[in-house]
Image 1 (cartoon, helix red, strand yellow):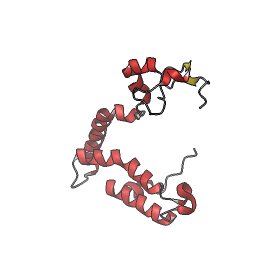
Image 2 (image 1 turned 45 degrees about the vertical axis):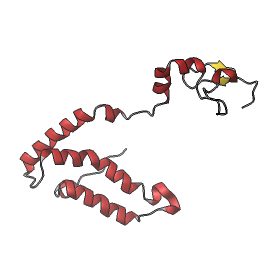
Image 3 (image 1 turned 90 degrees about the vertical axis):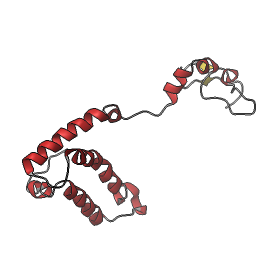
Image 4 (image 1 turned 180 degrees about the vertical axis):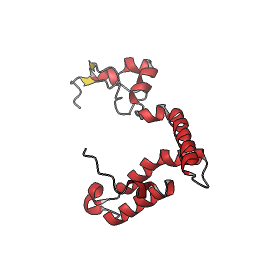
Length: 147
């Protein structure tokens, strides 16, 4: 950026001259935030920290709800060899695991795909079977919902 032009601070959004973005040590590049905002370090940390997922804020509540759901499924269906907590953890991780498999597909990676479509469907089927062996059988005749 040219020396005479104004810059926008990423924290306060104000347009200021480059001199207002000087780093503490000489020889370093200009800061992304102005010196006024640097004095209020809490604002800088809040503006520059990565955004958390809304699910991360409610992780404990989600885990409790999934544990209750797991306990009711175990009572109702008689799932053997799994505690409600283990089932809750598997339910919580299922979308991430499916996303990891789908992320290696042609639809996502294009010509650099790692897994063929039939392998992906098989792996997703295996993930669902780990959770509940009757899940696919119970839902195989259901109509697909339109988006």
